[in-house]
Length: 177
Image 1 (tube, rainbow, N blue to C red):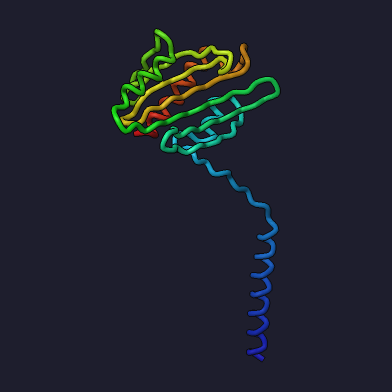
Image 2 (image 1 turned 135 degrees about the horizontal axis):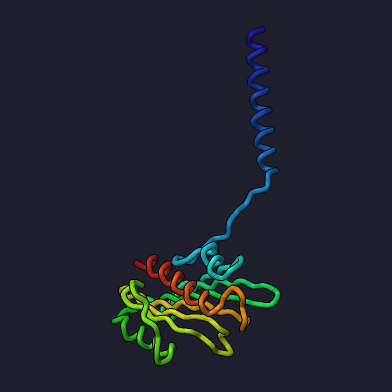
């Protein structure tokens, strides 16, 4: 009799375990997409762009730098944050100077961002309105661009762009060290 009772208890335990396993199989799970960008995640980019941003990453190749692009779209505006990082084999300063030339005659130096960094405004028909930072950390040259397609964007105003591009530059240069 004791043997029969022990067998029933084992059977009940197995039924419970199998039942719990079946229940867990039916529970929906939440998974996050892989974030391959080494310098910023989607949550940070979303905060900088003022809404939920979707990220894409292109790894570097022999001829191309690594690029992370975060896009936030609404009905009347598209905001983009693009980070480009290029590891130079030679001196990185000439490469930085070449990128800095795209900022025009008066780029603003950013203190305590990497080894050196400059910021400028972007007002080009193809790029939209925005802000740009070029800088370097050791042998890595980086460029950060935040743009909006809306000329009178209430979230990315001129002042907001300046603050947000500086925040992005701090984040990226800190991750490059």
